[in-house]
Length: 272
Ligand SMILES: NC(=O)c1ccc[n+]([C@@H]2O[C@H](COP(=O)([O-])OP(=O)(O)OC[C@H]3O[C@@H](n4cnc5c(N)ncnc54)[C@H](OP(=O)(O)O)[C@@H]3O)[C@@H](O)[C@H]2O)c1
Image (cartoon, rainbow, N blue to C red; front, side, top):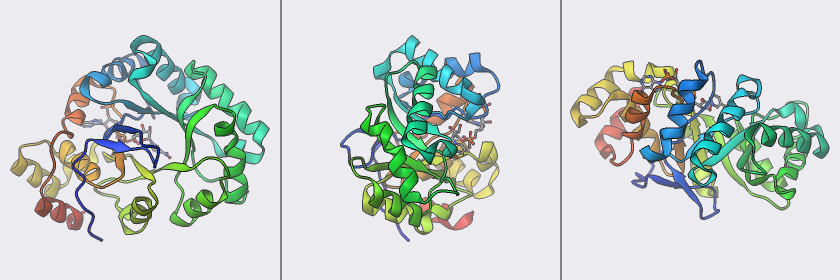
């Protein structure tokens, strides 16, 4: 499947008409919350305006961290995504209770985007997304979406909602793990769903691949920048790497503002 190269560093959120930077920042497995706070607070000055967090990360500590960053820098500087654990999806009441707990930790009346972290295996997809839709209907999220949903699950989710639309499917997508390109990405482009690519650096492993390194040498960028640029060159794709080091933030932000050529993209498509 060939994808047209998307040269825009602002990516649409579903069909909302709203855009976010092509690179956002994740908050999973933070080791040093003080350093992570400095990175997230500096992100807007590097052109990065979206943060991904979840109820699960640090058992709530990551949402609290994001709350501190928002209070420090300003609410308008960020598009905030958080994610709900699937066991809350059994009823609308449980959904609303869990959502309010996330909002309390974030110190917000509502988030920009709430996602189901992964499908709840004991419930039909239609039931869980309809229960989850309560967060939109009660004004606790401006948009809703899913994470780790297959093409089939995403289709059912889209068809089951009554008042909201699925704007995002957050999935594992990196230069080394490209399953998404075989079906989900095509469907997302067709349906106007944004793909948030998680673990886009494979925890740094992408920088070791010989072809990524060779392309990086050729284009005068770092392997990390090549690996991220490959992802954001796809229509509808926002990459959400995680870092708690300012020097890594600079390198990550430097993946925007330019694009790999068609030949290099083809090489990277086929290499890994
Ligand atoms: N929906 C889901 O199920 C799901 C699953 C996994 C992840 N996520 C989200 O996606 C985010 C990113 O995924 P991830 O944290 O799994 O993995 P990742 O972003 O691929 O890798 C993060 C690791 O890469 C290192 N790193 C960052 N910038 C670097 C650079 N320039 N050079 C070398 N190493 C660098 C970081 O270390 P330093 O901190 O030291 O820079 C960190 O250890 C998560 O934080 C989370 O928000 C979602």
